[in-house]
Amino acid sequence: MLDTFNALWGFLSQIWLSAFIDGQRTAFLLPAFIFLELSLLLVVVFGVLNWYRHRQAFLRAPSTYSPRVSVIITCYGEGRDIEKTILSFAEQIYAGHIEIIAVIDGAKQNLHTYQAAMGCRRWFIQANRNQIRRYPNRSYRVLPKWQRGGRVSTLNAGLHVSRGDIIMNADGDTSFDNQTVALMVKHFQDPNVPAVAGALKVRNQGESWVTRLQTLEYMMSIQCAKTGLARWNMVNNISGAFGAFRCDFLRKIGGWNTHTAEDLDLTMRIKAYFGRHPHLYIPFEPHAIGFTDVPDTFKSFRQQRLRWDGDLLFLYLRKHKQSFRLRLLGLKNFLFTVIYGVLQEVILPFLIFLFTIWLFVIYPAAYVWGVLLFVYFLYLGQAMLLLALYYFLISERREQELWIFLWSPVYPLFAFFRKIWSMIAALYELLARGHEETSMAPWWVIKRGNKF
Image 1 (cartoon, rainbow, N blue to C red):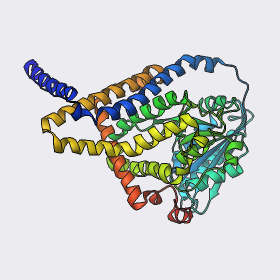
Image 2 (image 1 turned 135 degrees about the horizontal axis):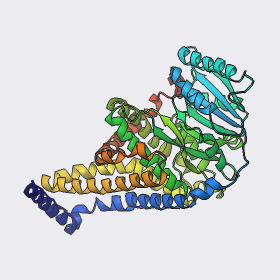
Image 3 (image 1 turned 180 degrees about the vertical axis):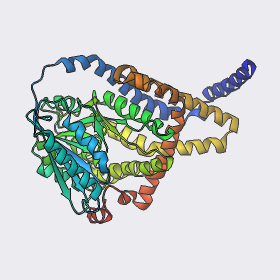
Image 4 (image 1 turned 90 degrees about the vertical axis):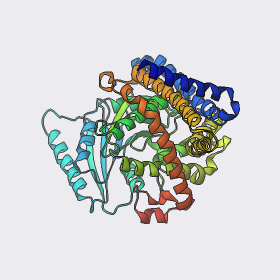
């Protein structure tokens, strides 16, 4: 066994050494990793360390700030799962008033969800009818939209009737820790904060290998990466499943907009004010956690990412191409959006695919597999570093999440597939306008929207 290992190690060492010596062969590999992946990694690592250094001061800072919060819960097809979401907001540890608004999209066709929401209303009234009110400073209302209009119209309907100073949006299949609202609201003490991004974790992480790998992805790309990016005011996206906004700011920019990927769309529109108002700041709160279900089969995962990744190209290069200006985004967010929004998320998948094909066409198979194995270990090291940062500095459930390191060796392969699939999604958007096939709105809503 030892002899076999030594022979394999000697073979790989020769390949890697030749790759380093022959600069022509690695000329297309190292720049992409060094200038894009490694630089972003350094930004995130130092951001997380900076966050950890100042975290206790933020938590210990006294606060009597408790504005009225309106929570808009978008409901479509969740059925009784919305009960968990509604209950998790009713039981928040927050001194201020929380107005819970369940907006039922297409209530006529979506009768099961509408009935579940009305059942929560009866239960809520009974809970507050006793002498000792079970949920003081909490109110609940159901807003049925009998004709389905899609997610954006659902959010805007809730915004129209809300009376809170702070608006939170939440999906009907997402539940929350009971300190979530208090932690999110605390950031709004700073008048320069127009919005706060909340953290998401995978609720059904144990259902399949697909959900376990997505769990690792959420830990690295949401909780770890956004924690680091927020320290430099470079949050890339406020999740559509969970975010908070200053109500007057949200209304001034027109609320949510149609088409698809309303979360990135709204984030881009908010950041378009950063160049003219450099004092504005979007924090990320890693301990304000929403638990959501992710696709549990490989097929459903591919379908979801076909929409998500195609939306990136649509929003960056079609709908918001006019926003790529220094005057609007400011220098820092302009560079970040161009490099890590367009280059890394839209263009880099094409380069990775072409580079891989180029290797197999030009060079011997043994050399190619050696180079790919070298790349695998580079990305494994990156994943291990991000997971270690998350686990030791950010995670509040360490005993439950120790298993993540066992699955980390598989993650670079999963990430490679995601890049290739992202390229396919971008091609589908370019050739067939894939964003118009979104399930976030019915076809007649998308058809009447502006074309980009």
